[in-house]
Image (tube, one colour):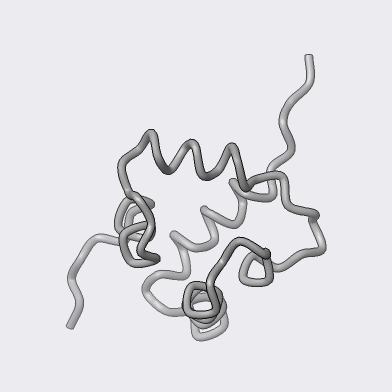
Length: 82
């Protein structure tokens, strides 16, 4: 049984991406603002393996689903204007 806590840092490590907080924030700033109708796993910047992992985490309601949902929310968020 996997008892690893599923944080944003561990999700990025699972995806094979730099997983320190500055790198995560930079990734979100660079790749974020996805169109609302675009499922997270269909974004162009994922490799096929990353996209499959993200899709399966949500469709199978896996242990990762909550963290993937949080990433989905952050990547679809629109910047606030003053």
